[in-house]
Image (cartoon, rainbow, N blue to C red):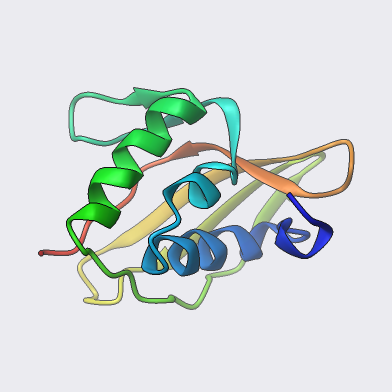
Length: 119
């Protein structure tokens, strides 16, 4: 991953995931997660690990799902952890993610529960 592709603020991650999925880049979206991250999708069956997350995102990309870029709400930070959130584009709720700062200063998701748009 190049320096330009890294999320250098916690808020960058949500935007980059959406941009990469909209471009059909499931591997690039999954690269924004730690190797053992948890994606709480599908409901009731969390997906664990970057490779499994990549497979879920590949299914979404193959289905042609598109994601809106949402404005982040204020980030809450504690040491090397960050809690980010956005209001869903359809105003049905708030999405929340937990991220950890990496040794190189970039940020990766460790816990995520996406809201998937209707196809």
